[in-house]
Length: 366
Image (tube, rainbow, N blue to C red):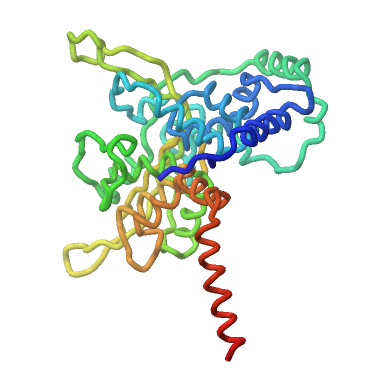
């Protein structure tokens, strides 16, 4: 389902669009898309994630066109994405290959490879900083030059072991056979029920950030009875490869490197009761998984909660109902359906109005 702008008198529509452009430019200045991509990174990442297209410059352009409205920018980005030719499919990307910029665990204080706090507002006081109002390009360059002049000891890139492997090594993690079958593609096949896990993960990954967070929060506070712990949260760069388009060798050395994507990956662990084989029960841990383009930590964590909820269904809770969750978190579908209420409903409302008047008149006559 998709809703577009209402059709009507062309002169009125042209005047409305011209006024829209005027409102965007009425201050006499125009923000550069490069500034949006550089300074509003979190917003650009959100739009790329919900738009299911990794293209920072295009997402920044969509935000400029949408005057900063995330839902409008996502609509524009999805529409643009639909015009693109899909020439290749990348090789499977493993989170183990991430060049980590940030890595934390809530399960253990000391983890193999260490905690890497990276850049995060989690440790700030969340107080407004009036000094930013006077910040200019010269001040920005001075800070960057000073920061880069400090001595530091780079770790160098090396793969980090997974925290969940610690639990698996102790026999406490619920394990499943590896499934290397090709994923379903909801952008080509459409969402159907019952859905496969690959479908669910795709819809969750490009779901509206606020909606995914809200439903994840609902499952956490009682509508699903899920209380996980973040085994590991990673943010960094993942290399993207495609097979040699000219054929030939099939080894990894024959693949073409396209570049990298910045992404957030989360594994949460949830304690569950399982039979111990002797008539009793023991505690084991199951895993919820979240993955989003860019820096989207809250959404990725919430996604991991909903991944678990939809994998282990419980009819008592709406957060375990795949139709309820997956049909209501899509940004374009949700905003489109709400926005369509602005379209003319003259006929249907007149019918309701006539019925209401007739009912009221009947009561008066009585």
